[in-house]
Amino acid sequence: MQNNTKQPSYGRQLYKRSNKKPLNRINYLNNRKRAVILTTSLTIIFVIVYVAGMLISEDAVSGSFLNAKIAPCFKYPFGTDALGRNVFLRTLKGLSVSITVGIAASAISAVIAVLVGVAAAAGSRWLDAVINWIIDLVMSVPHTILIILISFCLGRGMKGLLVGIAATHWCSLARVIRGEVLQLRSQQYIAVSRRLGKSSGWIFVNHILPHLVPQFFVGLVLMFPHAILHEASISFLGFGLPPEQPAIGIILAESMRYLSTGMWWTAVLPGITLVLIVLLVDKLGDNIKMILDPYRAQE
Image 1: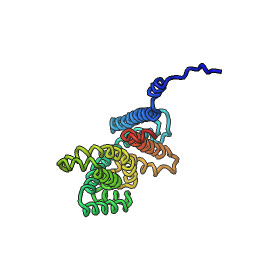
Image 2 (image 1 turned 60 degrees about the horizontal axis):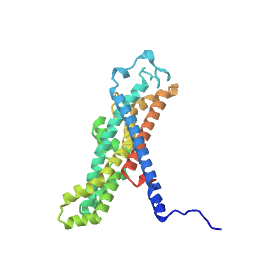
Image 3 (image 1 turned 90 degrees about the vertical axis):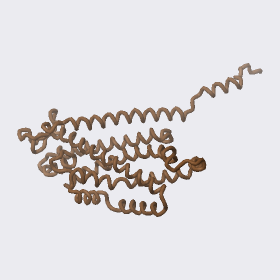
């Protein structure tokens, strides 16, 4: 019995195969789109929290004993403290202060890390050895203790806290930058550029620096949660911002006096808000890394 089923020609099969989209390409685009949408949403939330805290006036966070010790309600979502101050508004105000310190300290640390990492990788062997020894020395001391010492020596306050955080958070990123530069220097196109007579400055600007930009921004974002947590912890211990500054660490330190009286909301709700902001920024850093790194988009 003869089979009358008509088989498609080789040309038709080839045409159909060419019209099929590769699965990896589809997943790549979907993951990238999801990462961009999530990054945009997280950035908008972060900016709204920061701007809202900056726009709150000093009169809005002033106290009134008529409203003291009110539990969380519709009018006061985070309740009021023993002095009658709105804990929700103080938390937003404190977050804006903590975010400002975190951004400034992270930016300074990231710049230091790039300069030190490039100097270690591009310099002589003895310079590389000295820089690695300094990195090991800084990383061997707990950050909290080192920040307290630096802040105490500089008279505490905003200046001492900024310098302390910036001087202790650059080591890990510096090692990443150093390894990246060492790997790039061994590439073939770098050797070709040298053979063509290109200077070291030209090679750095055109070949090495573009590869360091993603590392810089990802390191900057991932450093921010550590900076803001250290700012809160140092202020909580009394070695950071002054007591009259509405920072999260100050709010938590003041709430410790009234926990035994049942005013749990003065510590729990600001603490949860701080943790959520830190997790938000950490997730933001992961998504930025996925956007800048094409290989991670296919995970």
